[in-house]
Image 1 (cartoon, protein in one colour):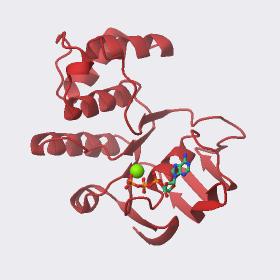
Image 2 (cartoon, helix red, strand yellow):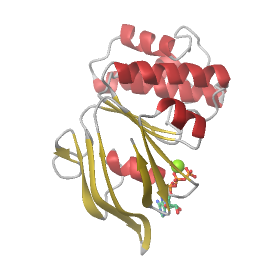
Image 3 (spheres, rainbow, N blue to C red):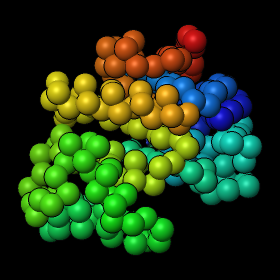
Image 4 (cartoon, rainbow, N blue to C red):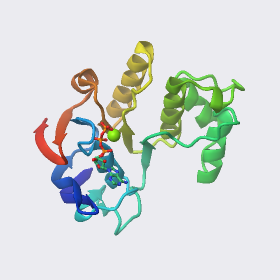
Length: 211
Ligand SMILES: Nc1ncnc2c1ncn2[C@@H]1O[C@H](COP(=O)(O)OP(=O)(O)OP(=O)(O)O)[C@@H](O)[C@H]1O
Ligand SMILES: [Mg+2]
C-alpha cells in the first residue's frame, strides 16, 4: 500500500528524515514511534503529499506522490489541529467539508459523528469544544469519506480513557474492514495494543521495524 524508498527530507541543510525506506502493507495498522522531533509528523506529511521529499520517493497504491498524484487518492487525515470553523456546530463543519467533496450525504455525516461519540444534533460551536471533542470531530471527518488509507498523527491526544478505548475499537474495526492505517504515537500502550507493525525513528532514521 505504501512504499517509502530512500526518503530524505532537509529543511535548509538540516536533515529531518534520513534515508527512510519502508514497505507498509494494506489492511494493517502501522505505528510510527519516536521521541519529540524524531521526524514522525514530517514523515506522515510526506506520505500524504503536504510536504515534498528532498530525496527518494513515496508510492501509495501504485502512484508516486508528487509525480503521478499530488495526494494519495483515497486518504483521511488527522495531522495537527484540523482547521474547523469555530463559530459553527460540528455538524455544520462536516457538512461544509462534505459539500466541498460533493458526494457525501447527511446520513454519512450523521453516522460518522455517532461512530466517534459526538451528537450530530448538538448546536454547540466548535470553539466551545474540548480538545478531545475536536479530536473526535477530526476522526469523524476522516471517517465520513470512507478512505482506503487513514493517516493519523497522535489521534489519542486529549482523549479520556473511554475515548481512547473507543477510538482503538474504531481503528481495529476499520482495519478489519480492510482499511490501512498509518499512525504516529507516543503511547507505548497504543502501539502495543493496536499496531501490526512498529517503526521507530531516531533523529530521522529508522532504527527498528517490527512486524
Ligand atoms: N517546517 C519546518 N521547518 C523547519 N524544520 C522543521 C519543520 N517542520 C519540522 N521541522 C523539524 O523537523 C524535525 C522533526 O519534526 P517532527 O514534527 O516530524 O517531529 P515529531 O517526531 O513529530 O515530534 P513530536 O513527537 O514532538 O510530534 C524537528 O527537528 C523539527 O524542528
Ligand atoms: Mg509530531
